[in-house]
Image (cartoon, rainbow, N blue to C red; front, side, top):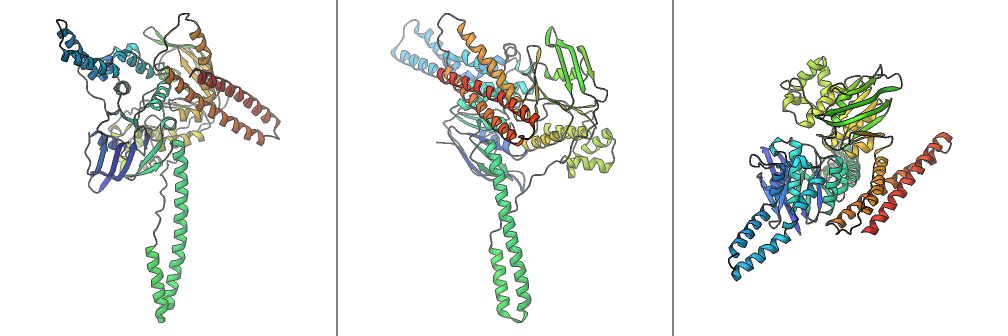
Amino acid sequence: MVDIQVKNLTKFFVIGENLLEGFSFEVQEGECVAILGRNGCGKTTLFKILTGEMDYDDGEVYVNPNKRLGLISQIPRFPEGYTVEDVLRSAFAPLKAMKRKMEALERAMSQGASQEQLREYDRLVTAFESGGGYDMDVEVDKISNGLGITAAQREQLFDSLSGGEKTRVNLARLLLEKTDVLLLDEPTNHLDLNSVEWLEGYINAFKGTVLTISHDRYFLDTVADRVIEIVDGHGEFYSGNYSFYIEEKQARFNLQLKQYEQEQAKLKQLGYTVERMKGWGINNRTLYRRAMSIQHRMERIKKTEKPKTEKTMKATFGEKDFSGDVVFEMKRVAKGFDGRTLFSDVELTVEGGERIALLGDNGTGKTTFIKCLLGEENCEGKIKFGPTVKWGYLPQTIRFAHPERTLYDTMLYEKNCTPQTARDRLGAFLFQGEDVFKTVGNLSGGEQSRLRLCMLMDEKINLLILDEPTNHLDIASREWVEAAIEEFEGVLLFVSHDRYFIEKFAERIWHLEDGKIRDFKCGYSKYRSILDHESAVRQPAAVAEPKVKKEKPKGGTKETEKLIRRLEREIEKQETAIAELDTAIEGAAADYQELTRLLGEKEEAEMVLLELMEQWEAAQEAL
């Protein structure tokens, strides 16, 4: 059954410049489809058209009228004084209305009931029960816990929340509404890692239809059945997740380029033949007619368009030489607010070349930790930097002292450079033409991050500190930032919820939880394996404590299925890592020290794989 069908959709904001042009696709019931494309290509506009919030200029749009459709980017206005709990409970408005009717009937029947009243009451009770009326409290708790909405936050006024917090609460409300078709516009942007993983499990178990816009590549790999990319107003279709899309897109590019080059070579050769035959045919009409025949054939040849290559930003971080071993060290560092300890007794040492990810749930104090390190916040304890250390910092929230200035003037004043240098540096970051005369205050979040990076990369630094560096960037911009960071040889310390980014760069992980920082001297995959193993060890003990037989909780099977899927993904990753180590071992056969190190790593990786397999078998038995 088709849930969404779009035929020859056209939408323009400026006459003659179509944002969407002849765009067609359909989505079957139960599919999870990712909508990709550069910022500004029309993804959010498409969602607004599907919900009816925005009109379109031509084409046909069909959304199954028997399905409830919800869009996460829309945050409805709620009455003044509404708490987060009120907003969450508003998802059950139809059930609440049903309950009021039941209560009114109960009062009316207390003095005696007619057959018609009894039939109506039975109908309402059945509908209320099948709609989940008796499970409302359980559902609110389950969704809130999964998305990290605490009991204290549920008591707060909704209007007092930040934009990110409102988005998270609205996502919870949408999930509670039991929507049949979910339109998710950047659903992971304001979620921590645990919440993102919970959402992935929810979507994978969701029986409805999902369209999602996301720049989180790990998320897309986990949930997407297929990909639709919007390119120049048209759709390009890929029958797999993000990793499949990347490989297939490159294969299509290579094929199109090869066809284009072969056609150009053929046309060039034919053109050369035509010119020669025309010259010979001045006094020979037969040769001239043959030349014209070849020319007409050239015109009829269907020409392959030359594939476009994406514009890339060409810049690297300026680097300052570092001498010495210790970049910085922290001794008994502690910080708290209003009687709450964010972290205490922090003892850490960082040496040259390290790449460290600072991870933890939202609100644990990661950004405060960074500010304490840089001296922007006071804290207890001692922080000492090496004598030649110079750091650069990209904060989570970008602010400019003079938002009224243009990009061009900002570079001239703040970087004290020549007009040509300002133009060149901005151009390297894809701020070209009239873009340089935009005011800084009118830039999008992603553009502001890009401008701040442009200014930061000019500085000579050997310690780079990034707080959510990919948060407002599209996939192309994220890949460019990653390419620039790969070239940087200094120390990297970053906060991120982008697992693709963490997986790529983290060689050491600091996990901030319950006021303590645990130091994992390993990459992200091994770190997750360790945490999963610890969780699996704790779970049997927790189950063994109660002596009274408990009723099996609702949704237990789904939770087990989600655990199995996650373990299968981890097992696949671990097997890939072992295969890569095998290849490296073969190449290091002549280097005894390197061979010894690699064999030790392989032994550790195989132990982790064995633990994951045991957990998978236990989960299968439980299922």
